[in-house]
View: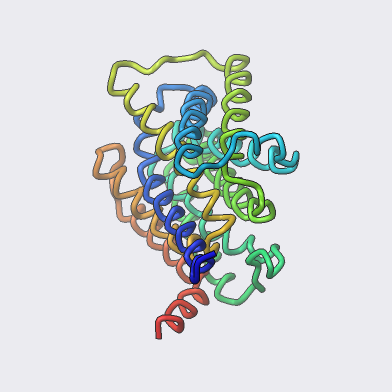
Length: 307
């Protein structure tokens, strides 16, 4: 190994995580434009494309598809739980409640990554729970409360929007626990994401065909949006994220992802798919501040290292 190569590897993996975050800032807008497609069907079609994107990852990294035969069962279960569970909940949330609000609730997951990493051993990036983690969580929960208790009758218990909000909460819990759990399988090659993407596409298709009526994209614009989603935010982004979670700076990537709620909200508003309001920006500010405070110790470490 060349001098410094060991230090560059975490940096490269962290950089891939940052690219994944940038791609995910586009996901809500693309998925909202495809909201006429039932959520499980959208999961199936998106991950079929994500599986194809895996061949590009194999070509770029030299990882072997034969490695799929050595992937432990626990990783298969974790991957299907994360990819299938998260996207089913997220797409359901976007289709049953105001997209920008559901999106903000969903992006509570960066702070949850910081909190859940407490459960990891120090050798896997775990850390003790501090007061600023709790304070950050409270701010984040306050932002979610501002969204859910917006005063509109539509958010009554049992209503469509409220069910959508619950879907967004479930998405945040699933993705954060999946991300932290993947750290346990740091030795599993990232090409395994291709296998879990295939399994997710198959499972989603089977469940969708049993409970949903398929709706094909209407026109070339929606087909293009589907391809972009399947190859980008639901495609290479997951290979990048997997590498970042296993080999990158876990909490740094978690902190960088705190910008995603605001970026994603700006994309939704700029694309005309959502309307801004003072309550919305207050909620976005609380969620972002909570996440930033939750990662306060890493900000100090980064400043000390630069000094």
